[in-house]
Length: 390
Image 1: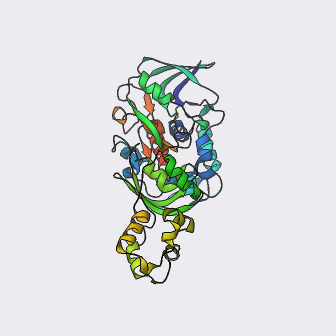
Image 2: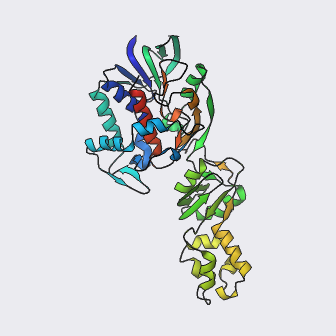
Image 3: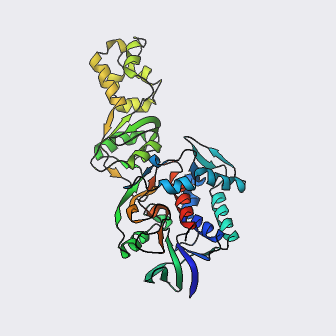
């Protein structure tokens, strides 16, 4: 039997942060994970360089059925607090774009920092451990059964993450725990994920696979200005990943391939003897022009274009209306939308309102951030908040 003050299930970003903070308070903490290594998603994040936070963090960067829930934790443990920890360990980092902070070297710098803090605060980490049964005979008393061990604790923290990237060990474990204790779970779906195209569109645009272009991508809920990337399955790139979290099946999205210019004016006032494709190639890759405008039309001289022609070109390139077929799903999704209902959780402590001693932190909750370090900051902030009280 392993007796401890706190058991944390999940050795990812949120779980390790919670363990560190609880350990600082002199609490005996055991972290359990079914994987063979801690922090696997930390290691693979940001292309191996870990986009660990963002200079600009606020509640508007998060999606939840309770949009106010994340405010308390984010305001009490901020991006600046985590940056201070990174500086304390002399980890070199840089801003890539839009406030996104990445390690200069490798993601393992962040993981090694967290593990060093765990060791310093006497946190015990047990890997290859899957919990098969949870009992709660009394308030603030939990009995856990794993494959070959038993654990007793006063506080149980669920930091098991969502369903994104199953190859990294993602599972519905946390949602099942919530349901066991009659805590509602919002339906889940893949977020920050590439979009797939209808068959006809896929055949047309797969020829552009590998081409990236700066765009404004929008729907009725939000808009994002960043690159999109054509793939052989559909569309990816930062702007597409961002809008995917605000897209529902059956809906359309609008893509402006030339967000910087007033195209109608450009075409009206350009050298009239130039071909349309010559003018457009100053702004767009030639392959895009070839796919979006038929060759014969693209070779027309500007002076031969009617106002209707110009309007048609502008609509094609600046208001491309697209109905995606779907998403690539959890296999490539960076986050899981939905999750444990925040209305049933304390925003200050992360404790379940009706189950004393049971806490939920990180991605398992119905809080999903934008691309750009926001989900890691939610992990640090929610883990920190629970760590002050468990």
